[in-house]
Length: 482
Image (cartoon, rainbow, N blue to C red; front, top):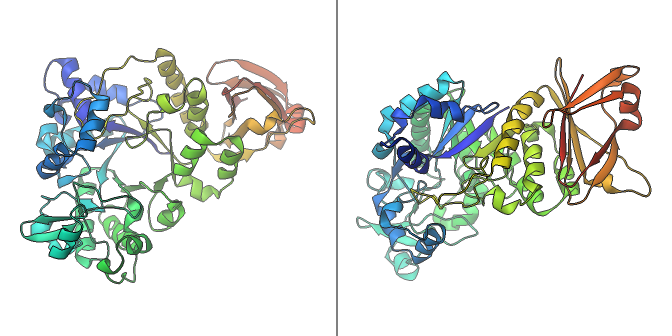
């Protein structure tokens, strides 16, 4: 099971430089820091934002009052030096020299590999910076405009060296001010994308594709209409991914995906796609909608990325107060599919800095939360082995609280685990029949991997009527059965 740990590379290196009293780049991160990252269960590190950021994009950001206001909201003592520009306004797919350049990245990858960790990096397929080389060298890769477009909609078009291009956008929001739109229907762009991804594959073990669904034929046609022309016979990703895998057959493809397009993108070649639906249900709905989501096809679920936060979403400690984060974290950590953790999440950081910033505010560590994650990660690594199965909870006519219980089992070659989560703000009781008929007539011991408490039960009762559970609000069991 893939477990990804996302790091905001620029901020992280800045804080390491302060910690060690010297400039730290990717090439000389102390070994003890890599050891800290190599937590039990984590097998993949996403170094977010390593590519050259755009000076042109930075200039645009510095003139954007709305962006500046968002920066000051996070850093009241903001200075111009704190603003680095967006890592998704890419000047070139070369590791930024300030971070250590290509040699520094190669050393970081070697350090991760020595600890059994893979490296994934970003690719932004939908847009590039206004000073990206393709605007002059390969203009047919981009959506073009004319003088009338620029005069009529200056917020949607930009002039660069005498040519007019569309600014990047998705169909539901205004254009992004600092990027230029690529043309998903362009044969030249598809060739250039393959070349770029092959180059990324030379430097990493996987790639996280930003807003991947924007390049799908039907989405792109909806966004750009006649300006894009007729869609090619073959969709974008089925063209690109197989050609990249001819060079890098094991390259992990992860899609940032929304609008319920995860299943389609899995079929177009992605190994994993963001599970935004589960995220929304854990934050805003309840046990029944979550359970419904977990009834989906298992092959689909294995191709999802479960998360509670990332650089685009608010911090979990801010959106899931009290014990809510504990229950949600047990849920995403023990389901099939990939898990995404975000640097700072384990320490209870509450402020999400905009990706434009090179610095974030200091925050006090939540020691209780850190200790919880210190137990959850190795427990989840143990649990997620073998076959997964969603379990049903039953109750009594005068007690329907069992509906708040989420439960599932994992059956490995020599292991059996049961996870039960009370996804509600009130106590819940229920009975959960376990799925192992050979328990009949045998004594059993259940050990909670989060607390080390043990429970002795007879196998017949565990089968019928089932394991009796009485959980306080937002509490969980992660049980190993022997």
